[in-house]
Amino acid sequence: MIWKVLFLLVTIIRGDWKFIVQVFNLVRCSSGNLVCWLCDATNGILNGSLANSYTNTDGDWVKHICENVPWDSEPAFARLLFFVLLLFIAIDLMHIWHLGVGRDVCGSTLKYLILKPGYFAGRNHKEKLHSASKAVKEFAKERGLPLSAAGKKLTKAKLQWGGYPHLKLKAADVATYTQFLAHLSVTKSFGNDDLSTAVWAIDQAISVFMRGGMFLNAEQMDYARAMGLVFLRCWLKLAAVALRAKEKMYKVRPKIHLLQHCFLGHRRSCRNPGVDVVFMDEDWIKSMARLSKHTHKKTMALRTIQRYLAGLKQELRRFLKKQTA
Ligand SMILES: [Zn+2]
Image (tube, rainbow, N blue to C red; front, side, top):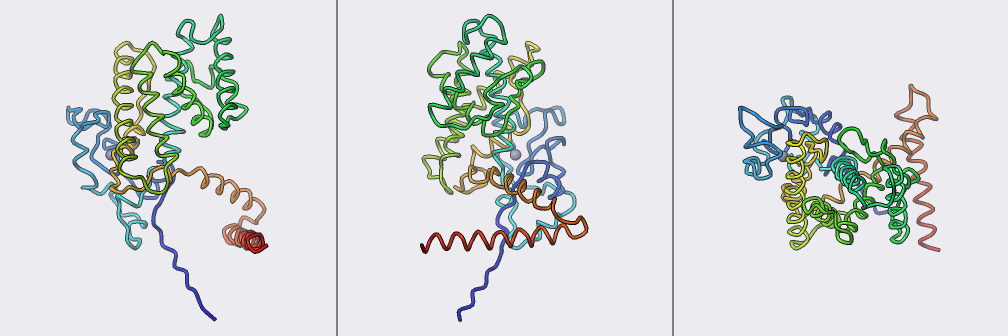
């Protein structure tokens, strides 16, 4: 008999920013003076200067990657075998882009286009929202893209119309809306070059990550970096103009800084950040939560693992049977 021994090794830890802050005891986080676990970027003005702010895409922070530890108390994870700060913590594009900056980009762009006379058919905002919904529905159907029932009907509430626009839809819907708006940016002029360029460029950059394999080649990395930086410069310019005009548009949040790290490839690896999205992890957690509901609270952890392993064994048997049939 041949014995095979499996060793489990943690190679990457991923989750939303809040989770990363909690498990790594991070003092550098979106609400702190220093905003990022990877670099020295500041959250706005620090010591009277904006030079190192995360909104400064050419700030000095780009030269100081992982020079200081981002916690004041060493987390248990940092004692794992082969732990390297730069490589161990993944930047999860789903929370950073699809449920963060992407929602801002889609929200502000849609509001701008609804307010632009004659862009979408209709006599009032409600009718224009209906026209936009119809157009995105047709776009998704033609290309076989996912769109939930909520995504098929735009409303002012879903766009958070009164505040900074933020398209409050599922991550998959935001991906479809991004592609839809990028398509519009080249087929029907926005009348705002910075906005149309920003939308087109970010769709190009995200597409490299989402369609690429486990590793990106030099050409893909260069393209994502170039398109990502074009997006950042246009978006930050739009935000600065809106801020001066006291308009609530083109929100800039710290997540945009982590997006820049993805574009710059600061994790010093050609590993595609697109493979670190947690779409499947979130589905798995939901199914585990459902499973644990059927266990007693005192033995929940053990029973959930046992039930999961029993199910996994069955799935593997079914898979092997299918393979050998
Ligand atoms: Zn940083």
